[in-house]
Length: 101
Image (cartoon, rainbow, N blue to C red; front, side, top):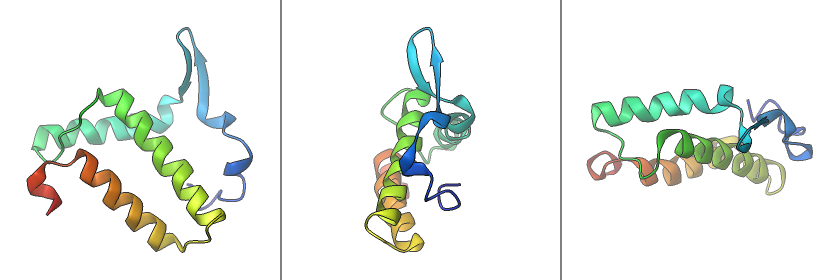
C-alpha cells in the first residue's frame, strides 16, 4: 500500500486517523491485521511483544508506513533495501531470542 501511494503519503496522514472520545487514533482497519499477527505470534511462541497488542500494532503500522515512505521518497532507497532494513529492525524488537538468529 505504501509503495503504491508513495507520492501521496508525505502530503497528508488524515486518512489514517479517526477521532475517538479519548483522542485521535490510527484507524483500526490499519492496525487490526497487525494486532492479529501479534496475537498469533504470541500464541505460537515466536513473538514476545513488550507492550499491549493494540498499542504495539499502532507503533508498528506508523513505523513501517512513515519510515518506509521517507526512505523511499526522500532518500531514494530501492524498495528491497527499505523493506529489509525495516523488517530486520522491527522483527528483532518483538521476536523471541530463538527466532531472531
